[in-house]
Image 1: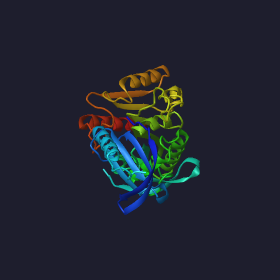
Image 2 (image 1 turned 45 degrees about the vertical axis):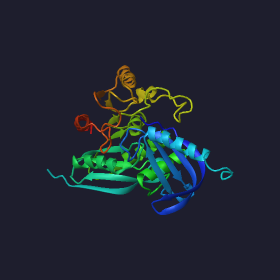
Image 3 (image 1 turned 60 degrees about the vertical axis):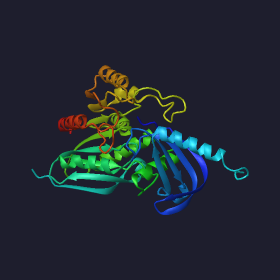
Image 4 (image 1 turned 60 degrees about the horizontal axis):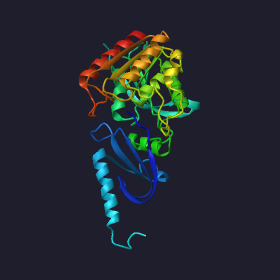
Length: 87
Length: 248
């Protein structure tokens, strides 16, 4: 099914796309049909800078299981960062 | 049989008189022949759907597929265009706009020199819902709904389609015969959704034909995807040709 639902997040940082590094301002997160990954639905993340046009995009499509594992790893990495590094 | 065809990217007039990109595939036979408006699925105006569009021309019809994300991302790669539309909140695309794009695409087909004036519409996935939408909104000659979800039922609060009256409530306005192709394992539309739509068609005295395939879920006609079911897809294509052969 098409889920349509999209979580939108404001982000700050950089991403590397087909034309090289660019600044990121937004991310879209959605669980829906993938374009490339061989699964019916995947957790899709688009890292974007809308002001730079549609091709300013870093895209990933992950199985739900690997997306949860990634989320866990992100949290664990931030939680274990040396004190004072994260303001 | 003279089977020459011409497939190319064109500009057509869509909703609100705006110019939008479209993919046209036309038989070069003298005809006259019918035309098919192809509505791409949510992932976008992509290689596979262009191939699907060309198949109609290879079989002796004219076809055109509007780029439904043209306004959000003109000239962009199909997946980038979909992502841009998604990020801007444009998905799901407004029904009024879809109807306008189909009206423009139908006018394009009717204006071709080898047109017999008849136009059908076909779509997959979100395009399946949009195909039904077009068929209850515009004077058309045939419609095909390939596993379109959210024709029946009310999405929950928080869903982008929440609050919109179910499209099935407009069944009385269907202007043409409807072919429906569904997978029994699909969750949207589920077999119950399909049965509800069928009841509405029956009670409104509409001409229709439904086929539901065992062992097939959503997107079973989508090549290159794990849900592709060749046996079901081949049979479904046969029904599509039969349907358009009868009504276009």
